[in-house]
Length: 264
Image (tube, rainbow, N blue to C red; front, side, top):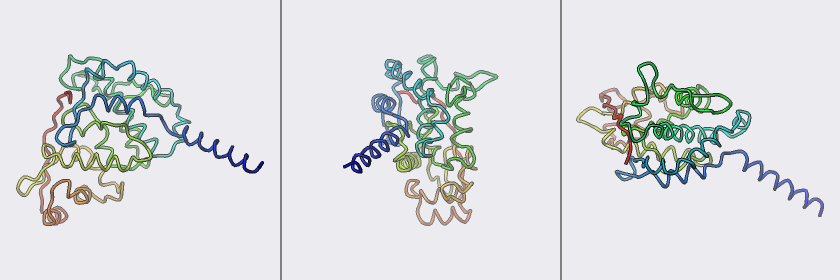
């Protein structure tokens, strides 16, 4: 009997530790489901910023909860839980930044100045420091030898039409890889941002800005061409196209980026 009770206590303790070893995304998940609208068969989304503004008390409560997480707690989580937390936090603080001036802006760039871009503003209390959006994306999410995940570029959202969709649900550590794969395929399937044009493959400039992330060996990808060939079905590439891509016989060109606000 004593052995059974001891085993039961161990199970309860382990369950409580497992629950504490991740961040509750319920509030953010609810806001996304309520205010993110899918368009083009899920290839892109629009955000009801007016609705987000009406629910700003909930958004701020969520942001305060992210700010309360200490670096020691964060470091105790599994890496997928850490990465999901950072992606959600980046996206939520981007929405909050838009709401500081909404509806009196046409682009997130309107929130910058001649001397400082909106991504360099240090206004985010996170993991025991005051950080900028750039600090989260480049200093944490893309940090060398930390997560090594190129598909994050289809998950972080910059509140712009040219950006990959803001997912209508929160990212979760236990299914993060599946969610990132879905986000990647959706973005690559969007012919307004990635498409064949004769003998040229025209891509979002995201692949130009972050080409190095697809060439570091992250996720087993050896080059940008290798990454694109892996997702050939989403891009609509034939086997011949892939062969040309791999032999360097297909030109890769980059489209313009649409910085207009991704609002409904």
